[in-house]
Image 1 (cartoon, rainbow, N blue to C red):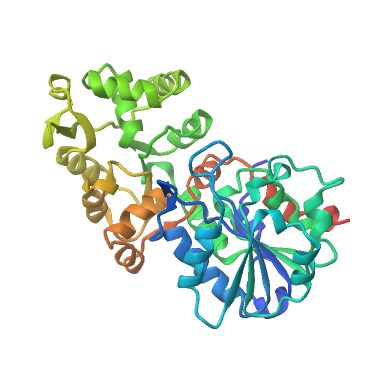
Image 2 (cartoon, helix red, strand yellow):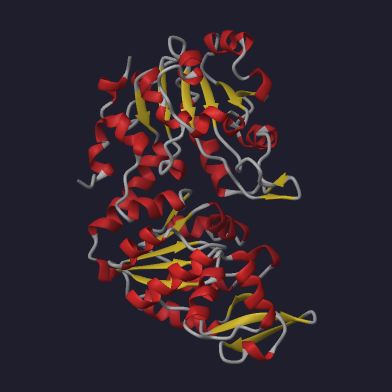
Amino acid sequence: MKVDYYRASRPYWLVNLASQIKSPTLVRIDINIPVVDGRIMEDNMRMIAYAHVLELLSEYAGLVVTAHQGRPGNKDFISLKQHWIVLRKLLPSSIDIEFIPAEKVFSDETRERVKELREKEILLLDNIRMFKEEFKFVPEGSRFIRFFKGVIKSCVNDAMPVWHRAHTSLMAMPYIAPTWIGVRSVYELRALSEVLSEPGENCGIVMGGAKLAKTRYLVSILSRMEGFTGGLPGQLIARVKGYDLGPRNNKFLEEKMPPESFEAARLLVRKFNIYHPIDFVVLENGENKELSIDEVCKTNGIIMDVGMGTVELYAERLQEKTFRIRAGPLGVYERGYNHGILLTKRIAGSGLIFLGGDTTAEIVKYGLDRIIMSTGGMLCVSGGAFLHGLACEPYPSVDLILKQKKVRV
């Protein structure tokens, strides 16, 4: 049975913080953001959004905050100390935020500090993925539960971007104390619910970024709405349709996309009419060239963005849709390639929904965030988790919240 999480979770929304949370409150957020050469990209929508969340909650309770950055083995798997510095800048000076490094997270010293927390005091714990227990939730004997149970008075799960994962920092909350769904997550659940309630022919999704979403997600999503592609997914769809993108781009695509992504793309192309770019911006010998998809094979340049013909085609088709979803950048926006921004301007207004950290980072960089929010659009920090919900897949940590009276021991 598929769950309408927006409606089912209503009894667990944070609607009266003064009576719902008490010091100390355990809060799970998601400030996992791009890292370049060991440094986080500070001007990021996720950081800004969650700074606002923490500012609000800290008015009513002292907070213990858990979050993650990257995955073990990846270059973006770093401590949260940089995040703490950025949050310190974003939060008002009246709020005290302290960083607890990994080696001290589960110490007696930290437990005593947690007990003493009062309003406008925040403890940011180090990258929770530095602890193996995070990846496999076993309530019996859990150090996470044992450490916080009896000390924490209330919990807030406000990390919708990782709701598709059954990780300990999310799943353990109902075992520790009464658990609420955070204000940011409710905001994004509403966007998801509105899309799912709309007839599929009135919806369209633009999929960009560096990877193709899970096949089962896309089969479910594309069964009910039109799909448009950019970034590497756009090149991949074009490639499996038989287009030659030139030796350098073909090789790059094969290096970045595993064989199963090619198989998934072939399956999707057989089942659905997925739009791919009809032209590209190609960088060759330091010069940008805008080439049709049939001309790209004649150059040895690298594809950097979709072309203006693609922008015009996508805009024309998407303007007919009640809901227009963007998931992932269409080009290398970090280096000034902005055709994704031009597309956004043409499809702005009520019903425009942005997903994920990189997509929102793109529009923050170009100053479109406030315009979108002021004209009826929505900026969602959840990316893969939103697609997970769009495919009507379950959110395991929310399922536990819905039955938390049974799980708390």
